[in-house]
Length: 162
Image (cartoon, rainbow, N blue to C red; front, top):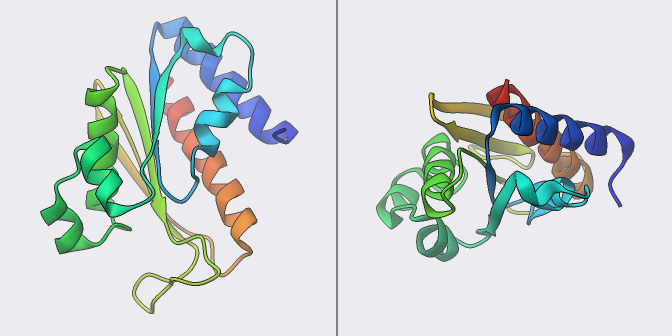
């Protein structure tokens, strides 16, 4: 189902988490569960993956991941602040050691001058803090932005699992 690059990265994340005894959660918006899907496509992943939240709407970000509505109102759903809150909320709500969050504009519509298509914010929360990454993939096709977002998110989990 997933290509070789994504599968290899997911296997690396799972192995690193097993080695360190870490559990993982995902909180996804524009990727719609693809990161969780990549991890759980691998047999035996249940010993690492606690769960995943697809928080596509602002209401779901608030209800499921505990992102304050005021934070979304102040910064917009596609922002560093919201990505960090999504990761922290997912980590808490799913009782995971690590949680990765993704929120962005995958297109083809929905972009603005300030937040164009291809802008994606990532956050990975863990015991030692939260890492953030902003990517500007440009106006690529939707599937490519989502694929690249899965790769970045898995890379953040790999790095956090060290």
